[in-house]
Length: 94
Image (tube, rainbow, N blue to C red):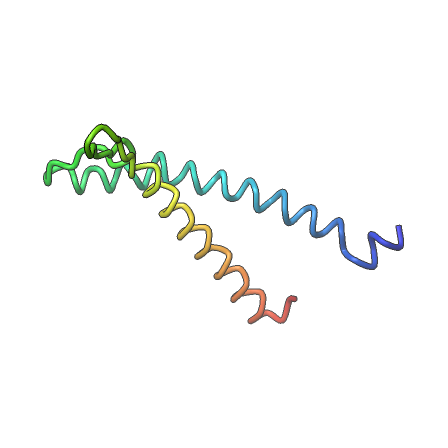
């Protein structure tokens, strides 16, 4: 018990679990809401569904849609973490 209270292991475990599910939530948000909106914007340009976007060079297929999905998800998660750190520093919580 002394180890847990001294090193705040329980708080770290709770933060890890919450962060994991926050990442899954943001992934669902990007995949199910943001990417279709981007697809609607890009559809008149003939780009269609961005998640399934791929290009073929020689006999190799490069699927860049999944990469764009991961990139947008990462940017949103990084923004959320940045805002959480900024707000907690302003409130004096560390």
